[in-house]
Length: 463
Image 1 (tube, rainbow, N blue to C red):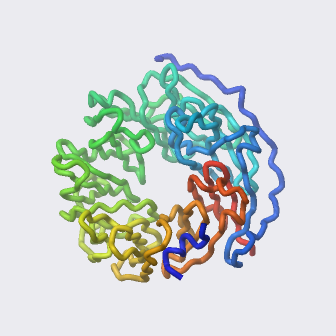
Image 2 (cartoon, one colour; image 1 turned 30 degrees about the horizontal axis):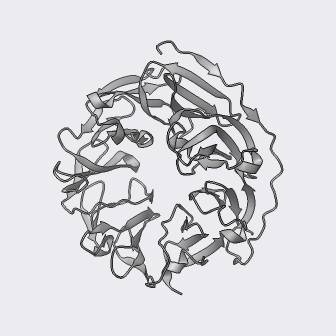
Image 3 (cartoon, one colour; image 1 turned 120 degrees about the vertical axis):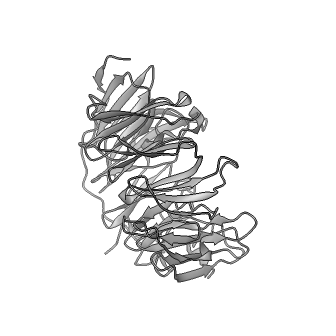
């Protein structure tokens, strides 16, 4: 069987005004349902524990799931969820001519049985942080003015507060709320660290960064990992100490193409040389103090969609891996770059010491597993020339990369490249459109939670 069919196994404003929403609706939990075997699957395939159709459960015809991190104020986003313990927080709304989400509500779902525990209004949200703070999800909204919004994970109680700050990004840590605000087009930007009642309770710092509003992606503009913060507005960025707000490094006149904050507060970014937009002339690895640890002139930028590394793991730049503590180049492997006129990176996921490569540009298409610490190839699968479209993995757990192509959910062993199990969607629901769009996937317990825009399911091992 062609290797690629491993993924597609089945053919086919100054004053603060606080208001508590009286519209929050809470339901009582039900007893978990029995796990059902999915017809035609192997014993290793998890069974169906529950299924949630938002149209049926909430009485909303044509209802769709959306990612709360992307907000509800603008265009419809992909489905997604925030997991807080045994609760899944997501958005449900009715698509309006495929462009906006009508009458959106935030809902809390019991991950054990798929029951909707509560729902609360979610209008005008720009973006939300995915890390609960003191049991609440924090969002910012733009209605008649700028607002902070919270959702209690347990009860769904929602509180809105009008603020004077022109907030365009929000994030949370285990003990602080951080917001970025100001006029990005005038390089007049500040970051505040504080609480819901006082966003500046800890500190406020101004940063010389800016861009056009169209270049600012609200859900990605502010990130904090391991005590280091990254503020990004278009091609400008600043690295700062999340505890004090002190600036650690900023790009200044350097034009940044891509950037990613890694565990340990390390920063990987590409320098475009301010000449050809989007093409890197240099890639750099900076430590949590902002100082350069390693650099490469290799122009190929890797864009892994999934990473579960630690602060002790090597960092991949171009076709090589570097020790993040010393900057030493540990190994080089040409498999990390796809052939062809326009070379591209093949790194699709870096998980548990394995680099998963997906090469769709070369004449011979393939997938591989590379040891992150040695650069040695662990396995290699070449696809049949008639193989179906490629699928990228969406989540990882216990040695398995799992992903969907709208036809089936498939998991492969990242150390061998072998298929562990495949769950055809038509064996779960006879409606061919139920899982056709959207691919949010989240490990939970000893199983998985999967969501398309029209259906969410819980999968649990049969034994």
